[in-house]
Amino acid sequence: MRGSPGKICFLSYKKANVNPRSARPKNFTQMLNQLLEILTDSGLFYVDWKMIVMWVVVGVLFYLAVRHQFEPLLLIPIAFGALLANLPTFGVANKPAGDIASPDTGTMQYVFVAEQDSLSSPRLLKDQHDTLWRLFSDEKVKENSQEAKDAKFAEFEAKAKEYFAKVEKLTAPKAKEEGKADLSFKGQGMPQLLAIVRPEKKMEGERDWMNKSCKVQFKGRELDVSPNDKLVWLNSEGVVDKINFKEGEHVAKNQTIIELKSPHAGGLYHYISLGVLLEIFPPIIFLGVGALTDFGPLIANPKTLILGGAAQFGVLATLACAIGIGFSAPEAASIGIIGGADGPTSIFTSNKLAPHLMAPIAVAAYSYMALVPVIQPPLMRLFTTENERKIKMKSLRKVGKLEKLIFCVFVTIFVIMLVPDCSALIGMLMFGNFIKESGVCERLSKCAQNELINIVTIFLGSSVGLTMTADRFLNSKTLFILGLGVVAFMISTVAGILMAKFMNLFLKEKINPLIGSAGVSAVPMAARVSHVEGQKADPSNFLLMHAMGPNVAGVIGTAVVAGYFISTLKGM
Image (cartoon, rainbow, N blue to C red; front, side, top):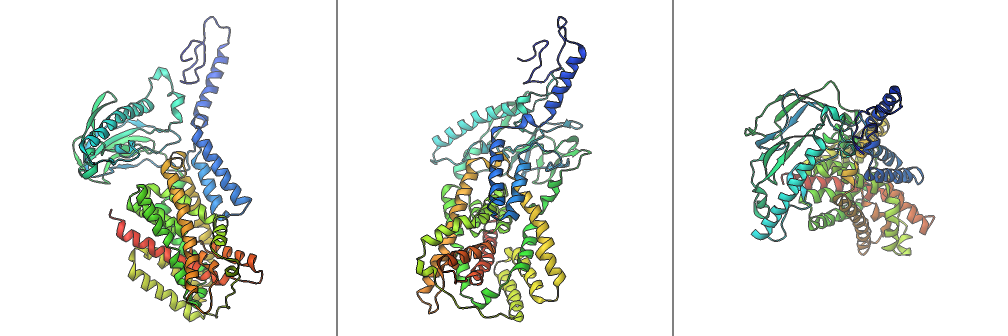
């Protein structure tokens, strides 16, 4: 019951009143009130079924990392970050108060706060729609006819009215005598809506219906809203210090529209995660990978470069599949890179082309890297015969220091001149390898191989995990990304194997097709899996160093493909 005299309300918190006829002492009622206040300030009321599902997912990741040792250096930081992301934390990832920027160039349509307003937000913020058309799963109309567009807009109008009513209900302040907000609302994680910006760019073609507007009620005002309107949400607690634009004024993208002040700093991982958003961590990881990598097998057997290139077929095939499903070209390219089994490159690419999908893409890429020993062996046995798996390859020649140093410099110049957008990744990869192979920078080499890459791996993995909130992860788009990621990885594996078999048609010294599967970039896990499968067929067969050739070639190949995608698609 709500508000009944002498009873504690568990849905809406009110101070309990003492019934004059009740024999309860006053201090007993005060104690109950204090206990209830402690409960309302705890995180218990934020728990929902999605959060519990994510705890199960975290448990599975912990199990795979600890029990089966599937890339524990990656999975454990990701899993623990995901656990923190699905708890009502404070001081972990919350943003500091500061400037609220305009999401687009256009007109300041509405402002819903005033200067000196004190703004608060739920302990667990959930992602909200940045544009009103996202109330639909797909903003396109199936038939490019006026009737279809009118029907789509009518559907939008109904959903918009319902949505604004919901936002108002979940964020409206309660009267003082009612105490704190309804506890059933706490788990919704709805922040306050600060403003609406109408972009000046008009939509065309099958999206031109998004230029129309309709009337909705919000906070006692009648609003004129359009599907293309951009919503500006509160992302941290604070006091409104200044409002720089009034309703009806023109505002440019990223201009500060509202200034917030607060004595509270941002959470720890708000700042650490900047290493991902500012593209600092992926190149540093490549520096460490370069310092750990021996390009000798690739130099000694250049033919394996073709196998690393063949593995990129998975990336291209998945790009086509994703576009066919309905993803945009930049989104599809970011998803396709998962097929390279290269976590840093996936993060680097998605951050430039599809930042809103970076969380599921990064999780998929790192998860499939960890699951190489599970996914690849069945495919390797399916697409090779026992006799092919028993093929022995001659020992590789010894590659000298000068060759390795020249290789680093040549690859750096050639690849960056060819695809400048992959400069950060290829440059740091070869820089790290040059430090190692020079033999005169032992301290720098050891630092890059150990302390530096280990520290960044902790921060990168946990930052990726913190993006795995339930509302981001448990949706149809994420499931599509995970499914497409598996397809990309499988096609890359099979393409490398089939390319090795094709090459054997023309080679006198045969290549064991198993090393073709190492063309994915999971260094050195994929090479170890090729070696293990070869030894199962013939215990005297040693393929590890041979498999390292296509393995490191895959690292270079995936970075080049990523750079090409960025250079051609970043403006779309």
